[in-house]
Amino acid sequence: MVNIEMSDAEYQDWLHSQKSATQEEVQVNHDAWWDSLTDEQKQQMYDSKEALFELSIEEMNHDLSFGK
Image (cartoon, rainbow, N blue to C red; front, top):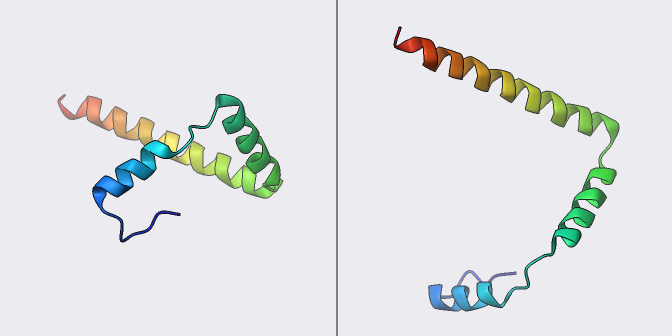
């Protein structure tokens, strides 16, 4: 955890001292997170993503037709 009283220089030192995660570690963490979700949570995430995608498409279509 980062101390909020830390100066910018101290924060930069701390930041550079942190170990980067490997792709394998990231994938293992993602898989564990995904497996921890219920089917309902996964469906809610999918539905939210689809709604956002549809909204994005509608905005792009509006932007393209705006100048006509």
